[in-house]
Image 1 (tube, rainbow, N blue to C red):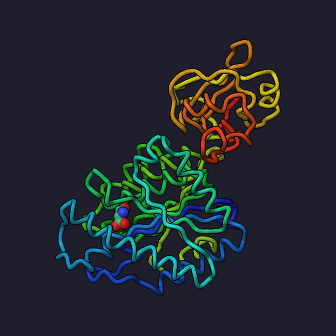
Image 2 (image 1 turned 90 degrees about the vertical axis):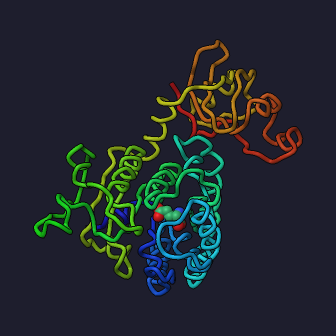
Image 3 (image 1 turned 120 degrees about the vertical axis):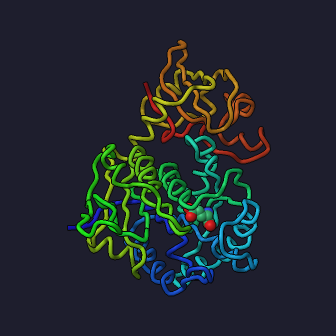
Length: 371
Ligand code: GLU
């Protein structure tokens, strides 16, 4: 039997501070990271795309700045993150460099990914990196985060990255091998649940509250992550990351908990575009564009006859046919001002008109849902 992980095309792997950084000392566990990099290289070799979401910046940085153990003030966490992030990124670069794999640092705030707003920019960057063969190494941009930096935030961030990137699988490497029906630290007969097909109140109750300590967000944030991921059509697995070669272990069928999604990421994304976004404007298209859209093509600026409303790149807009009937909706790749400038023009003219080389499509077919 092949593991679900083997069936996923695009995989996000989330790595927590506790796995990567040794206790209070703030030392990086290089042997472990190298073994993980071997697993990532093996996945890529077998045709999977991989993205990493990693914590550890604060844990590494605090040692270098000589901050005492114990809780940090927000500005101290941010300073530690600024110092640690550079080392963290470098560690991945070295570990994956052993396999001649390039890495690229992507710092996001939860805001960038919230409800997928502003997601278009981040998404095109991630897609471009993957196309060019680099592994995106994502962390929260802690130095500009306005809220308290909470351990466990990266579980949510990873789920949002998985959603944004339409990943098929999200792996949360943890200090526990999955979800148990009772707290395994208190109940010796607690049983691991191998598969969760719906995140019911009973399942949430099994997660309990986050344990004390600063190494893990606990099960609660992982279940929130599972909700975000599975709604976006992405399967999620909680697996033991403490062992060496944790991804290989999942592929070999070792114990873990899979949260399965009912639909695929493309379907979930289209449902999101069709259902839950308020349209900020309207693009009216000519007959030629209408026919092309009906054949499943993207919307090019050349076929647009009118641009109404005020919108930014990434906002949802309605698409109307020449008779004013709504024919679909999608996420627009240009602001309303730029869209007005390029409407009716060939894609090759975009650079001359706007002074920069943007997308060829006004709405890419992956971002378009026909009514
Ligand atoms: N972004 C934080 C860091 O890199 C960690 C957040 C988390 O552990 O969830 O140190």
